[in-house]
Image (tube, rainbow, N blue to C red; front, top):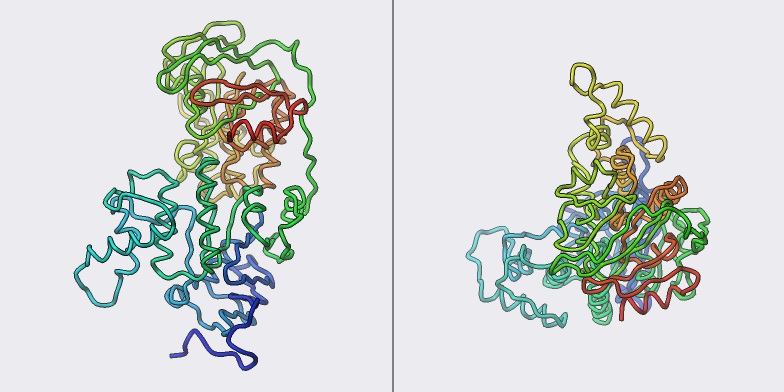
Length: 511
């Protein structure tokens, strides 16, 4: 059997400043599709490097090649620690210290923190009894190394997502990681939780562990990484230092397009009020919330995770009725007892969790698009008319620019950006007066984000009132007419982009 490692003929095993991992001429085909085309990649020991690109650019394929899941096409050259790698498998990749923390974390919810951390180190060819004392000691040692404290006996399912991320990092360290890939590690974290995770990333770097950071949040990429490698459509664009790099320039490199970042400058003070909220309260989620949204207006609502934003949105959508206060929709007082009542009144809500709450993943694109308006698709026989459904689906797929293979395909086959467009289509089909968007670009790459915001602006110009909720302050700053800041269940600030700087709002939110 040929070893996965062989010493190179020229030069020492590793030189100062030489890459820990170096790849050249990496290509990969899946059938007739070329996922990667002559890609180059390198990372140094102790470096934090960003792997950037839109969804579908080949990032995941490259990671799976490096971790031994996929084999590259012939002609590829791979060096690890100065040695040539051939026939890399997941087992040999782990033996080299290559660890991947995928976005879903791949942990075991019913197992304890200690069991999850030490799981891989207890795998072996021969059955043996588990040494729980050694397992707990190893887990405690790694958590101490990371500078965090967790209850080793707690079931993983009881932990917040930020704590689960720490468990996943700890498991990689138990396996003596030399290179760790982190796939969208902050996608579901608040800013405070993100900051804490970045401290851990810097600590790994200081210990000489190389970290590849994959994230759509460009601000944190530029903050924590020293270099960024950009892929576009499966091709290598280049590797660039983050010093002096801007989010705008990085977005252009990733998409090949130029985006215009400018604040909204519209005077809608005379437009009719669509939504009026007065002193709305629901203990302990929020208290004495008052706001208005006019026809055609985009009102941004921001604040840290747990500030009460989503709870307020659910009350407006009839899913968590307020205990006191009033809500008026186009001049008529309303008090929704269910989301069905809200939908009939003209309110639509796009959840931040499109995978669990926004879409039915195994069902078709067509069924997901039509599910909120099935009554309108009934024919004379009181059955759903295939002709009406097809016309509805075709209209929204065209109007929203959704890229699909066939409407009958499962919605899970779409990219994140296209899935989000289907969620929008589902609710826009109800012809709402008020559209509530709860973090509509979570897990969506920069190109798709721009497309979604273009749709939102188009809807506003057509007269729809929109409540845009996001903890990514640039999203509301560059896309809302007004911004409300929520903290501890109360509105504590109101801003007009252009009249207030982005830094001022970020400083207030993260204070």
